[in-house]
Each structure stands twice: as structure tokens, then as C-alpha cells.
Amino acid sequence: MTSLQLFLQQLANGFTLGAIYALIALGYTMIYGVIQLINFAHGEIFIVGAYIALSLVLALGGGFPWAVVVVIMGVGAMAVSAWLGLGVERFAYRPIRRAPRLNALITAIGMSFLLQNVLMVFYGPNDRRFPNPIPLMRWDIGGVSITLMQVVAWVMSGALMLSLQALVMRTKLGMAMRATSQDLNACALLGIPVDRIIAITFAIGSMFAAMGGMLFGLHYGTINFHDGYMVGLKAFTAAVLGGIGNIPGAMLGGLALGLLEGLGAGYLSSQWKNVFAFVILIALLLFKPTGLLGERVTDRA
Amino acid sequence: MRFKKFVTWQWAGVGMTMLALPLIDPNPYHLDVLTTSLLYALLALGLNIIVGLTGLLHLGYAAFFAIGAYTYGLLNLHWHWPFWIGWIPASLMAGVFGVLLGAPALRVRGDYLAIVTLGFGEIVRIAFTNLDRWTGGPNGLLGIAHPTIWVPGRGWVSFGVSSAPYYVLACLVTLIVIGVCVRASRSRIGRAWVAIRDDELAASCAGIPVLRLKLLAQGCGGCIAGLAGAIFAAKQGTITPDSFDFILSVMILAMVVLGGLGSIRGAVAGALILGILPELLRGFDEYRMLVFGLAMILMIRWRPQGLFGATRHRRRTRYVRAIPA
Image 1: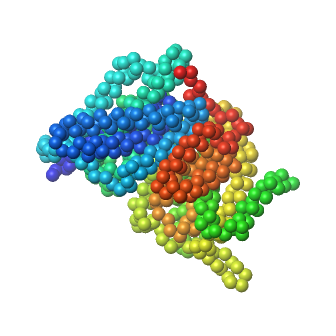
Image 2: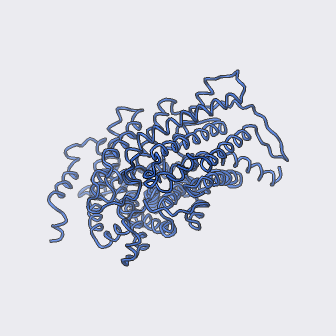
Image 3: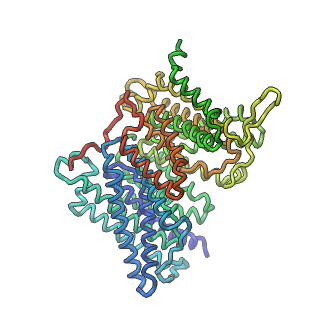
């Protein structure tokens, strides 16, 4: 394997990881954009999505075409997570929307503990093997092997992101979401159902996280109830890297972080890869204090 | 005269009762839980200076605690520094790191500052995990000496593994730090910190050296965390990087917010509640952290301003206000 091939291979691996991060980062960024809340429970919603997908693939068993299984897993995980996102918003965030912003951060942390431990009670504390219904096919393109799973991940996340971009930029709902993120009070005065828009934002963000969760399970082959924490942290980092509150920024940040990690794991030791991501992030923020694509300077907490 | 005004009878009573507790309730488990909670209280007091008074959202505070613990641990293991001297460099080192981190990080604001501090916390933890040669890697430092005390007739006696002496030590240190914090928050510097929190632009227009005071806040907060870290290392005898993760940082933040931002008694109360609550829930076993998370949500829901919400200063509420849907 030549050095160029190694580079391209790491790039392909990093790209898959990046797509997953981007999907989760989108939820962080959308929720932050609308109500300026860092939703720490988002990582847990992601891992709930992964567990729902696991339950579905176990329940379906063999005998179905793999594409059908994947679609059912994806749709099921997204549906349950959307419902969960709505519940979290209704239970933990809406009642305290008038309170100082740090409070919502604390309830988010409480919510994260709660969901994590609900998962632990339901699914047990050990790693769970994640059966992969996608047949193990690989193509050899110039010495770089691409698996079918990777292609599926790219296609699914790409389609989702494009449809989100279309939703936000082209539809009335998207316009209402953008308006809400600009000025909540003015929107409320204009008769936009702000509460409903916020709830929908949570639902959509959670759906994306769930899809990320399913792909994460397929990619790594095992999941644990703890995984939501570190992956959530990474996705949050990705969102900030791209400029939080900015949807294309989240995609870019997610991909960039995934690529960095792929390359970092390939060339540096894999133990230091997490540090690498954070160092890049800090260095970037010092030169560009609002992230790659961010413009808004937010006030302090 | 001033001292009298500062230490009221009420507070002297509370302090005495706390110090005398081992005589009333010598149960080592209770004292152990309380000692841990007091260390949390120290951390919450330090973070309160950074987040509560100065308004800098810090999500990597556990790193300072780690730096203090490792500094004392390494000094003790390699050069046999006793605890009573070792805590000083431990505290200073954490303070220095607070300033060092602060200098570049304070260019970024708000949630971006939060992520930079979070990143710093993770970097410190991962660095301690991977610098095997110096820090023992994931296994941490083993065999750090316990503090010793000179007893007439018996010479130097180690604190050992009994819980009462650590409790008394933590209690004394906490009381002193509370005193320092009260004095600091009422001083010109303390008022300048609050001014920066409430309106940075106005503060800088009024001639407050904003950057310098922000660095000072980070340094002070770091020093207190480093001191707590040294006590922690001396008490445990063993430290591993796992003890200083992001969860600890957010727990301390939760204590500060639950108690009421900027309130000193709030920080202590929040630390005691969040320190003791999980232990009280031991009976629920696997539902313990579940109930704990629920309790955190409900506490914030019932008292959004925290237990001892600051009444002296109106907090800025430029966030989402009442929305008629």
C-alpha cells in the first residue's frame, strides 16, 4: 500500500465518521440556533436511536432483504427519537424557558443522566453487539477499499442533509424556523406558533441524531449506553467548529472532525486523536472566534 | 472590630458544629461522604468566582482539580514533599494554568468560551492518561503519602485511612476559603467581577481592567481547585485520570447553578446537596443516577433562580422571555 493509498483510505474512513458526526451536529446546531441552548441530552438521544435500531434489527431477524431492514431500522429509530425529543423539550426545557440560560444547561445535564440510566436499566451496562444486515461487499478503487456500508452511510446522510437544507431554505416551516432563530419575541408577536416551531426543531434534530446512531452502530459493530457522551461531545465540538447555529457549518464541522480523526488515527497514535481534535478546535477558535462559518457573536452566558 | 463584624456568632456556631461533628457522629462512611461533599464545596466556591461572579462559562474546571492533585502527587512521590508544603505549589500550579488558559481563551466569548474550556479539560485528562512516563497513564499515581500531624508524645502520626481527620481538614479549609470568598466578593475586585458579569462593555467604560480581572478570576478559581486537588490526592493516596472527567466539571457547574449563581452559601449548599443526594439514593441501586437526573431537572424547575439566588444583583435575562404561543 502506497502512502497515497493509505491517505485515501484514511480519508474514506474519516468521511464515514464525519457523516455520522455531521448528522448529530445538525441537531445541536438547530436547537442552539432556535433557543440558544446547548442540548447536552442530544448525545443520549443519539444513542437511544442506536438502541432502537438494534432492537428493530434483532426483532426482524433474517429473511428480509437488507435494504428493507435498514429502512425499517432508520425509520423506526427516527420516529422514536423524534417522539423522545419532543418529550424532552416539553418536560425539561419548556417549563424553564423564562429562566436564565444556564439553568437549561443544568436540566440538559440532568436529562442526559436520566436517559443514560434508563438505557442502562433497559439494555444492561455491557457492550451490545450490533448485527449488520448490510452484506459485506467491498469495491477496490485504485487500491482503496470502499465497503457497501460506507456507501450506504454516505448516501443516507447526504440525502438527509440535502432534504434538511431544502426544508430550511425552501419551505414555510423552514422560514418560520429561521425567523424564530432571529428573534423569538418578534415572531411570537407576528403570530408564528413559536412553541410549536421549537418543538418541531427538537423533533427534527432528534431524528438526525437517531440516524447518526444507527450508522454509528453499523460502523462500529458494538454499542454501549455510555457512547452517547463522548460522541455527543464530539458532535458538539463539530457544531462549534463550523460555527454553532449554522446548518452548513455543522455539516462542514462534522466532516472536518471526522476527517481529522481518521487521519489522526492513521498517522498519529490513536490514543491522542481526541486531543488532536480539541487542539485543532481551540486553535481555530482563537483565530476565528465564531467557528468556520459562524458570524454571530453571542453574548456570554 | 472588622473581624467581629465578619465572623458573626451565627457563622461561628455553624463552623463549630461542623468541626465537632465527628464527636457526635463518628460513622466513618458518613464522614467520608461529607468530606467528599466538602471537596465539592471547595470546587464549587472556586467555580463560583469564575462563573457566578465573573460570568465566564467554564466547562473544564475539573482540569484544575486534576492539576492540583497531580502536582502534589508527583512532588510527594519523587521528592517526598509533605502535604503541608506540597499543597502550596499544587494550588499555585493550578492557578497558573488558570491564567495560562485564560489568556488566549478570553478572546472568545459565551458558548465558544465554554467549548474552549471543555476542550482544555479533555486535553488535560487525555494528556494525564497518555503521558505514561510521568503520570502512570490510566493507572494513575499510586502510594501518595497521607498528611501527617505532630502529636505530643507520639511524634508524627499519619492521617492514614481513617476519615475523621480528613473531614476536619476539609472542614477547616472550606471555612477559610468561604471567608476568603466572602471578603473577595465584597471587595472592589469582587464588585468589579460582578460588573463584568452584568455588563462587560459598561464595566470597561467605567475603567475596569476587564481582561486582567477575568484572568485574576480564572487564577483564583484555579488556585482553589488546585488546593482541593491536593487534599483529594492526599486523602485517596491514589489518583487516576478518570476521577477528573467532564462529568465532574458539569457536576460542579450544576452545584453552582443549583445553589444560585454568585451566591457563596448557595455554592456550598449546592455542593452538599449534590454530594450527599447520590449517597442517599444508594438504596435504589441501579435507578440511583436515574432518580438523581430527575431530581436535578425538578430542582431547577421549582427554583429557577437557585436555592440562594442572588438578590443583590439582577441577573441579565436577555434570553428567551415569556412567549405567548
